[in-house]
Length: 130
Image (cartoon, rainbow, N blue to C red; front, side, top):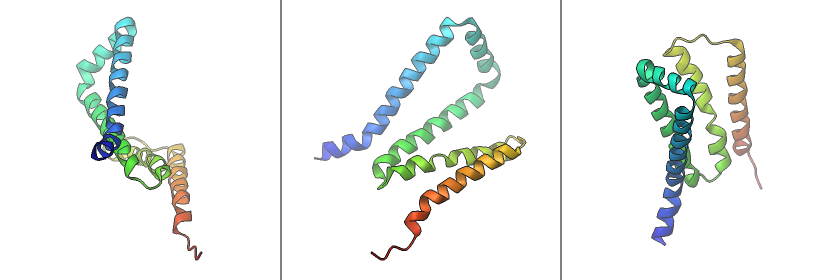
């Protein structure tokens, strides 16, 4: 049964690898077919390759962490819900690192996300005697 356990734990990473390869093939196909996309891709490579690689790696690692957490969680709904906290972290990172201006709608959106996360955890924190 050890092979069943290993397959269960590695299945999310295999899924991610297949998804990543298909994404690369589709995007490169679109870039090769469209002259506009070719020009945009060339501009990104010339001017923003470091940012693009950093964002790509960060996004990939975050997604792999979520996939790895799924088999370990007793309630997968929590994993799915709490992956939305990345939006709040992104807003904070944008403000602190990139010096982006935070607008009222962004603050309201993050507040609603955080309130929803709190409400999703609240029922498990209440006292249930029976």
